[in-house]
Figure 1 (cartoon, one colour):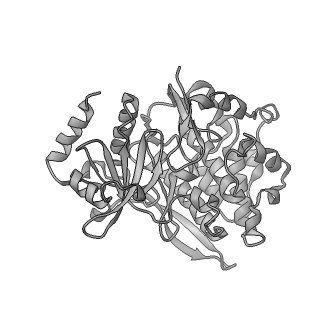
Figure 2 (tube, rainbow, N blue to C red):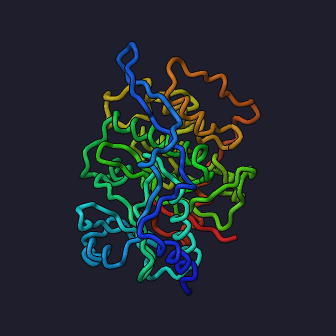
Figure 3 (cartoon, helix red, strand yellow):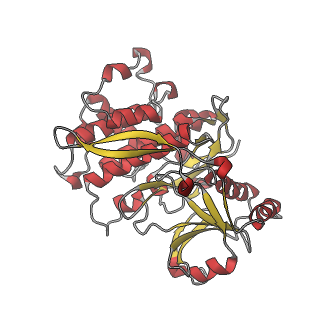
Length: 391
């Protein structure tokens, strides 16, 4: 496979070592203030803001020697993640900045994988939000490389499931849940490009030093034109336990695809359980009957004991119950998810009550997923399986 696409990117970056995408300035949605209510609890306020000059999306074209030296020749000691077609190495630039270098592996001769890798560059060039991983730059010499800021805390998955890591406290979990929701809302509704991530999971949410979450890994992301209601995709790709029913069965992708995966993400945050257990049962199929009965306390990560905010917990649990509905029609948008997670007062559950004939629509499809286990590969920085089905 000749790097025809790579050549076009070289032309793009040859003009300037560093350029600003002024024509693609992205409005930002952020938590602009934390205010204490009468009970002393912090309440969050959403605001859409236009980027200032310093907030504009920029990237740099790195030369191969820079990233080779930064990673000590891509030394295996610096390998922090490995997937089916890419590897991630940590490194340090000459100016002391810690970076993560995502490299398309030499064994990846699949043209589709190269297309996804290059698509990630194009997608990230349009995003600018504190809860979305920002691209420092890329390199097209001697292969394809993406360069990001390095987050030493790793991913949410490692913080939740690494036995050598202390139990993550509730305050950090809640901050991660809200920040990830803000990032998804931005991708769906605020960024000039309507972006569907397609692979929201704890291993793809990185965490900064102050526990700010950043959505990463846009290899499967799709741009959805404003006038389109959905996108039909083949082959079907994603991670076991996170796939929305309409996507798994028909290849239908829209914002509600990410909403379903975010619901699984919330369940993982509050329960500390993995999306698929050793018996191949998905987390959402285990949690849904519990949520339907209102036994929310049975979902709490036992490692937290009683050290969590019950109101915040119930809001996240209710939001998760809405997100994992089988019918995409009855799932909320990310804007509505944020309202459920952040609004004060009682939750209006009647508003979200489904018609009786819709209530039993939920079904488990983990058995179907695992029939395809032989064609799966390991997800980047994850022990779960990635599903690929060709039409």
